[in-house]
Image (cartoon, rainbow, N blue to C red; front, side, top):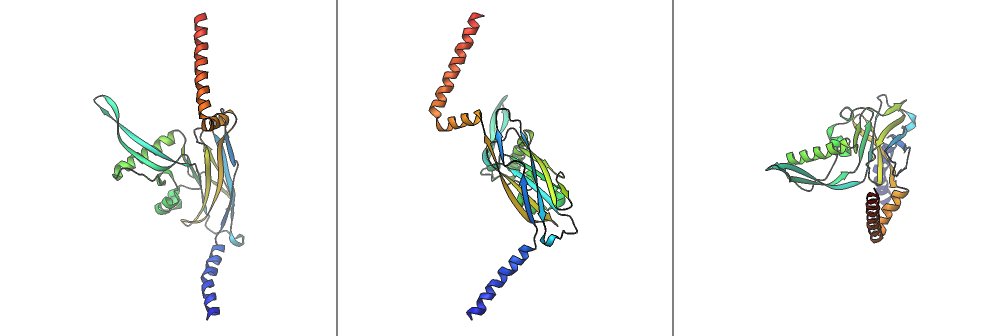
Length: 255
């Protein structure tokens, strides 16, 4: 009885393994695994590339699509709406989002609406309008949508949210490449480059590569000083301000 029972348990697992073996795989990479921010940093242009590995080398008759997403660390952010009261602008409603990506850039081989349906796009956050921002205030869905649209619009203006549909190049149905801009306003931290392979409206493979954005040189020293030696950092800043003020006054008296 035991010998017959064990194969019955292994059979579903073998079926799953064989089914997974029939799915294609992604072998992605990125041109820079580390981006260093210095005083002269004006942004970067990252190349995300890779290959699609099909089982037994058999490519499907219908070409697959590729979507690449570069995402920065999540942030908790409060959006405030101002209104004019008696000629004075004051804060009115506000909304808090607990997991807004500090940076989000997406490229795809075709427009997202032509690749997947809205449900699949929402599951994988394919597009800025599909981001799961985890709002923790406001029960009014209309007001919440207004604040979310405002957040996306503000970050688009400064290059922190970017969408580049139809820009991924796929060669011979196997090799792909995409370029995504990294804004000069990005925050330091751990970023992820996610690649999705979509076939017939279904995500059949996904892969992730990590990217580190960090400060270097004098900027890194100042950041470490402010974090680890806050007292001496503040004292030095005060002394520098006083010294510069005294120097400016001395020059003005001589003139």
